[in-house]
Structure formats: C-alpha cells, structure tokens
Amino acid sequence: NLSTTEDAFDKLPRSANGSVSVKDFEEFIGKYFGGAGDDLIFHEPEDFALEPEGFLPKVENQEVRAWALEVHALWKNLSRKISGSVKDQPECHTLLPLPGPVIIPGSRFREVYYWDSYWVIRGLLASKMYTTAKTIVYNLISLIDAYGYVLNGARAYYTNRSQPPLLSSMICDIFNQTGDMELVRKCLPSLLREYQFWNSGIHKVTIQDAQFGDYILSRYYAMWDKPRSESSVIDKESASKFLNASEKAQFYRELATAAESGWDFSTRWMRNSSDLTTLATTSILPVDLNAFILKMEVDITFLAKVIGENNIADSFLVASQARRKAINSIFWNEKMGQWLDYWLGNNTTSKEVHSWECSNQNLNIFASNFVPLWLDVFNSDTALVEKVSKSLKNSGLICAAGIATSLKNSGEQWDFPNGWAPLQHMIVEGMARSGSEEARSMAEDIAMGWIRSNYVVYKKTGAMHEKLDVEKCGEYGGGGEYKPQTGFGWSNGVVLAFLEEFGWPRDRKIDCEQGY
Image (cartoon, rainbow, N blue to C red; front, top):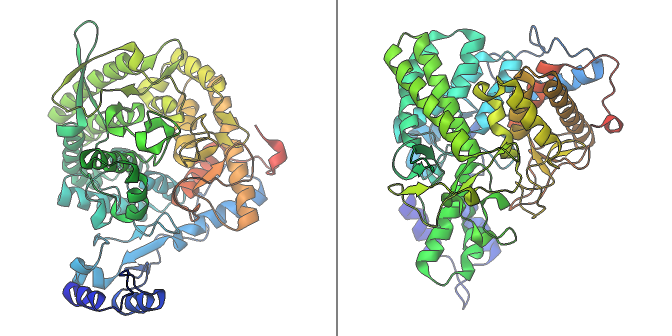
C-alpha cells in the first residue's frame, strides 16, 4: 500500500546531495510498482472478423485492399480490458476502472482518450465492429456519470480537464448505422449533463457585438494550476523562468488548457509564436470548440426527436440557431473566407461581457479555421463551401500529403509541417458532403494524398503513425515534447473512413509519385 511504499522510498540510501543511485531506484520501482501497462490486459474483440462482410466495397485495388485489412487487424492489437486489480484496488492505480473493454491509441498512450475515440469509432464502423464502438461510448458515459463530463483520458490525473466534445457525434454515427434506440435512450441524459459543463461557469463567455446583441460562446479552461502529473518535469522546466508564484500557476493552467484543446502544443495558443511561456489558451474563443458544441446542439435535437423528447429537441434547436448566429458574427471573416479564433483579454472571468472588436480575430491561418465546414449547417450552403474551399486552396496549408496544421514551423507538434488525421477528416468530409462538385473533387485529392502517405510510411516502418509530415509524402511527423508514437487509433480510423468514402480504383497507383 501507499504508506509501505513511501516508507521504503524514505529508507533508500542517499548521497550527500540527497540523490538516490539509479541501481537502488530501479530496484525500488521493480519491487513496489507494476510495469507500465500492467493495468490493462489484451482483449479479443467479440465482433472482430478477419474480413468483415461488406468491408470497403469501393476499394478495388488488391494492394490497397490487403493493406486496409492489415489496418483493420490493428483493432485487435489495440484492444484491451481493465485488469482485475484496478477494479479491486482502484486507489492503487491511476487508470480508472471503466466498465467495458477499450481501444487505446497506441504506444505511450495506454488508456482511453476522449477525442481520439471519435475517429477510432469511425474506423470501427467501417470495420463493422458495432459492439466495440458502442462499448467505447458507454465507457465515456460512465465518466460523465462519475465526474459530470468526459475526462481528457481515463486516468485519475486527467480529472481536471476534458477534451474536444465529440460524444454526441459518436452516438449519432453509431445510431445512423445501427438504429439502436436503446443507445440513444441511455446516452441522452449524460449528453445533457456534458452540454451543461461546456455552457456554464468558467467555460462560458458572453460577447456583445456592435449592435449590442449578446452571444454565448465557449472556451477551453482546465481546472488546474499545477504541473500536469503526466508531464511534471517538463512543465516545471518550462515554468522556471517565472519567479512570481501566481504567474507560474497561470502558466500551468494554460499548459493544461492547451492539453484540453487537444492541440498540445501550437503557436495557435501563444501570444509570441517563438515562446511557449506566452501560452494564453484560456484567453481564446476557439472556432473548432464552438463548432463542436454547435454540432452537439444539432445532434441532441436529432437524438431527442428520435426518442420522442420533443421539448428537449425544441430547446436545443433554439440553442443551435443562437450559436450558429454567434459563430457567424464572432468568428467569420468575410475577406479571408475563414472562421478565425477570437482573442479575449488576459485572465478573463466568465462573468464579464466582452465587446466584439474586429482586431481581436486571430488572422493567422490554422487548419481549425476550416473545421466548421464539417457541420451540415455550413456545408449545405454551396456558395459558402465554394468560398471557404477557395480560401483553403490558397491558404498554403495544402501540401503533398495532406493539410498542415498551421503555417508556422515552431517545433511544436500542432504546427507546420505536421498533419493530423482528425483535421484531414473533418475538413475533407465537410467538403465531400457539400453540393459543390469542385469542393468534393478537392476533398478527394486531399484524402488520396493522405492515404498514400500513410501507406508508404506503413510499408517503410511497419506501423501506423499518430501524425505525418505533410510536406513529404511517406514521412511521419515530429516535434513536441515526446517521441512520435505508433499504433495508431485515429490514424487507422481516418484511413478506413476515407477508403470507405472514396474507395481506390483498381488501376490507381499507391506510391508517392502520384501526389496532390
């Protein structure tokens, strides 16, 4: 138990400066701690088939099809269940005892992560693994039941923050393929609770436009002002320039809030793009977060109607109309043809009303500026889609192997030249669903470049990677505070979703010479 372990640590022999030798420390760790990942056990998914019936019917090229089946088989590699010791002695583990089996992202990410799960589910749906997909949702629902929101990940040290809210999207996509009414009934109360989390307290911000109209929007805001437990050494080192305790605490909050955004880290959140200590994530109204919450409002309207909860449906229809208006008023930049993040003042509270100023829009170009295209309420407007697609085409973000995250090469992983599966997917799917032939053609070109690069990287390294270098077809990404990871949940999911949507003709090559 904890007291025995602490006692043993206190008794370790120490040198004059108080340090412990590597040998003694390793022996101590081996005796008193389990191995990394011992809290999870491999699990054979009950709905896995080597080649599911109806799998990727549009993939005619046999080489691509064989690879797609290898990617599909990775669900088995990434499937786990929580070990009995976690359930019996939760106080001895950081892993939270989720009720069902899980799909992990891979490598160092040995637990469930919130927004990763959406693209994992998209891949599972392509793989016809409906039971596994539903189990992921029920696991996330259990976190809402316990904490009031879905945590960043299923660890005790993630209870201070969430991640991009995509649970309603997961439920809608599963329902649209399975028609499972019971899933909707079970999940709706939890979705309402999650919605409340994002639309109250520190996450809620009021902006007043020039006509004195008030708009309610949301921001990321971690409930934490200390080093992140999973990165405490790095965080303390980053914060060492601050001498003032309150400045240090605020910087720790900004780090945790950037982690809540999923974009950890990016010049998107920095006042000075060459200095991580200028992170100001809590002072930004993000385009994508508000698009996700608008989608949540639209999804809840739909799901409530499905099970006859018409009062809920009516109230969320009104909420979605108000947020759509807010997104257009606060984020839209007509001249650029993009939605732009909006800067608030420093250390703002949720009780203030902020006056909208054009100069507060962040004019820098990020892939997130195009995420609203993913929503049907925007991609159903053909003229708008064509304007935004043209803006994307001229933005400098589109490269040989996909869409770059930003135009700034800062060394941070959510910046140029890295491309990430979720951003490719949302933008491509939004354009592909629109009524514009030009946008759909552009979307297909981007998807083909992304598939090709994943294929070539996989053939070279034997693995799927969490991010790619979009400047060079066949290269994985880098930068940030940890080594590039493989596995990889959302990368697998997006490749399968793209192959399901666009297919791959028999005579189309899959090498890097065929780029965008």
